[in-house]
Structure formats: C-alpha cells, structure tokens
Length: 440
Image (cartoon, rainbow, N blue to C red; front, side):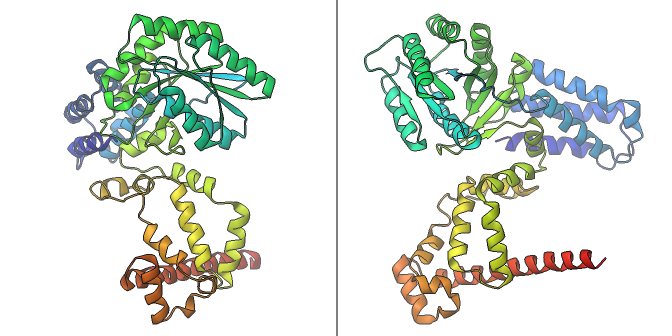
C-alpha cells in the first residue's frame, strides 16, 4: 500500500534538492506535485487542498526560512501533517464494562465477519480477556457459519440462534448470556448490504440504540477509495461510531481512504487488517504510517512484533547456549517458526527503512521457509543436536527425505553455520562491553 504515493512524494521533494532556502516559488512548485500525488492516491480534492494549504503555512514560517536543508525540512513538515491528517496519536479501543459490547458495522463484503474473528483473537491474546462472538448477521445465510468457523480457529465461543431473524433479539440474548457465563467482551457481528440504503441504516441504528455499545467500529474496504469515505460519512450520521477499521490493506490500494477518513468524518482509524490470517490485525499508528509513506520504515512496529513472539526467559536461555557454542538445529528451527508468526515476510522486511522500495518487485512467498523446515524435520534427534556430524551420506539422505536437493541442504547448513557464528560474535561482544563497564 502507498507505493505510488511514496514515489510521487519522493519526486516532489527533489524539487528542493540543492536549494539554499525555502521560497514561495519552490514551495509552490513542490506543493503542486504533492497535490497531484494525493489526488492520484484517490484523496478528495478538498482534503488534498486543505493538506497543501497547511503544509504551505508551516513551510513559509520564519523559523523554516533559515533551514540549512530545505528538502529535509519539507519532508518533516509533510510527515507531521500526514500524521495529523490521519489522527496524530493512535486511538485506543474502549472495552470497559460488564461485559463491554463492541458493535461491528459496515457494508457487505467489507470484511466485517473476518475482522470480528481477528478482533476476538487480538483482545483474547493481547488483553487476556474472555471474549464472546455474537452472530447477528441474519441477512446473509453463510455469515453465521463463517463466524463459527473463525471462532473455532481462534478458540472463541460464538453465540447464535438458529432460525431467529431479529438481530436485536439475538444481540440482547448474547449480552445476557455473556453476563451469566462471565465473559468480559461481546463482539457483535452485524449484517451489511451491497450499498448504503434506508433499510440497512434503520436496522443498524435500532441495534445501536438497543445495545448502547461501549465501542462501535465501522469496517471499510480500503480498496474502494473515496467510496469508502462516502459510506463512512453515511454510517457516522446513522450511528455516530467511535472508530474506523480499514481492511484489505494488502490489496492494490492507493491510500486515499486512510488519508481522507479522519479529515472527512472526524473519526480515528483504530485498526488496519490485511490478509486472511487471524493474526493479521494491527493497531493504527498515524505517525508510523506516515513514516512508511515517506520511506522511513517502521522499526518500532517491527520490534513490537518481535517482542510478541520471543519469550524473554527463552531468549536468556538461548543467549547462554550461544555463548557456550551450543546453538543447534532445534534452536534454529524454533527461530524460523517464531519469525513466521510475525506475519508476511515482505511486510516485515518492508518495515526496515529503505527496504519497502527495494522489495517492491520481489515476491517473498509465505512458504519461503518450508524447504528449510522440511530438511530439519528429516534430521534425526542426534543430528539436530550435533550439526557437525552431517557428512556427505547424511546430507544425501536429508535431501531425499525432505524432497529437496543436496545443494539446498548444503545451503541450509551454511546459513546455519553463518547464523551461529554471527550470534556468537554478537553475544561475545555484549559480554565484553559489560566487562569493560564493570572495570570502569
């Protein structure tokens, strides 16, 4: 996402390269390109104009005129305004209550039901709360079964009533059931329609009044651009929701919805969702998204994802093993699995500064580690713990057993040895630093 916008903005900043100071002339030329970039990203003309006006006001400020490097100053100003337009600070979801009720609304096909499952997993795993999913989409026949399937995947119970057509009754009964069974949060999946219509608005408004939810989220397909913004306005008038969820962020989207929704509706984007994996749900941080748009990466989110997967106690034990040169293929296999849990490999790599552009045309499949895993799984317990025993005949057996080639086996063993060597150097270096500090 944002690839085209990132390229266009980068070209617009080059206008200021080599300039000694920011002037009205070179700012006007730069803003002209920025406005075009925003319009091409499907941002409405009104929002694009307001954005450029604010950037110009800041750029022509007296404190900026003396800047040594105008190009860098303009990048900072645009970054700050992008973050401001998307909400400045991230907005927390409100799940306080006994139980807290989260109402999920949106058009048909926007990904409401999938998001409901993802949100249930997010609250369950990140907050440690007991979650109940309520199947209140009585309009779409397959919606209840889909929610049950997703609930089974994430280990969350789904409340439904076969044959009941009144979503208000189902929702009320679900909340009552949640109180009786000690659930902390009820996520209510509602019905959508193909377009915004009076019947849909009346139904969702009635449900909203009846439940009085602690949090109401509007789910919108990011690929629909300005149509997403218009439907967000219509729903906000009907139910005055608390926040927006952008789905299908891994699709061919230009970013217009993400940049426009907060400015048009005044409501913050709270979550972004990409892919079908239940773990593929991220809290929306405007400043971090602005970083990625401008090619600065998102190292903070990368570190957070890593911390979620790597246990501190295990990390200390691993560090001790590395220090004594006891890192084995069992440890290596565990590291591969933990890295995969962090998400799509291309998305993860794209969080590093400059890598998003470098990997744009590179396809990194989700099963990239499968050959390595197959080779390690083909090893005997002794071979995993004693990599030095892997001679030619053993390597041939591993290639046959894993359905790979000897070249792939040799490559994996070489990567393992390089990883072990680099990790040993890193651990030894940190120990030496600690010894130096103690001597001082």
